[in-house]
Length: 290
Image (cartoon, rainbow, N blue to C red; front, side, top):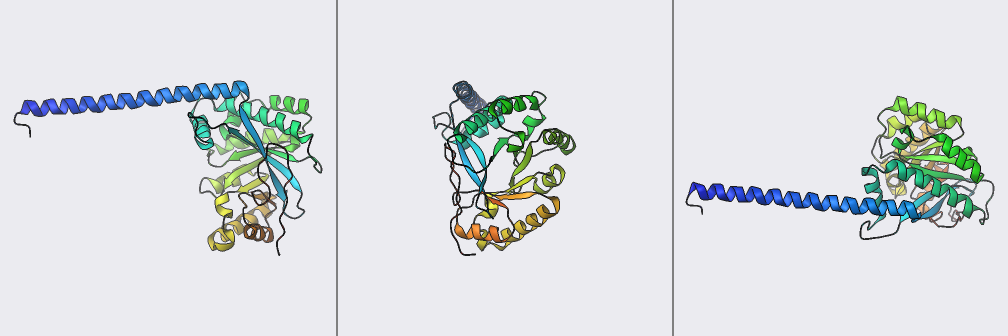
């Protein structure tokens, strides 16, 4: 124990200094990691160092592959040990706009290149994941996208901007005007992650997407869960009234596929229908008893 007040104050000062130095060291480590990740991100964009996969989306009535979602994945490194940490960093950095434009161009170029060697019926749609704030950015000019599509021979009607519902929209009036501009050029809109517990209902009502993508948390074991069944039924009814089409994500079991097919869901996506591949591969609906 301390016998003198001076010893007590000395201990407190040492403790405060230790805490300060520890905090300073932690901040330094975080800043150094941020710098390393930023440098790695720039290298990835400079070298086109992303793997692009295409997962099929199937019409559950006809079995036809009507679209592919483009999925871009970085290589596993010490800086980015998994894809989730990579995209979390991008979203928190000031590089979102540049990276989104890079991914858009890369996905479209690889899509049309790999589509040439695929056996497909008709012209499938391509779903591109877009951060909502990018479309609001004044630097993001739709004319550049149209020019790229013309060079690649892709019609705007083939392109669906998939907006993640986890990135909540705050100014719905402004965003609705922006989307109207893109729609007037032929692009379509999908809202991803619907039912994941974020801003779902307001997003659907204001933005009126052409496609609603049901979050995998709603689909997994839906054949066994009454609450999930009730919520999906409500969304299906809304879709009927608003001329919106529904895509169920994360279908991995025959029982899930059977339930959603029998309850009005238009399209499906998931391992049970087709895994993501670098080449364009149509999916297939497995046989099941209706």
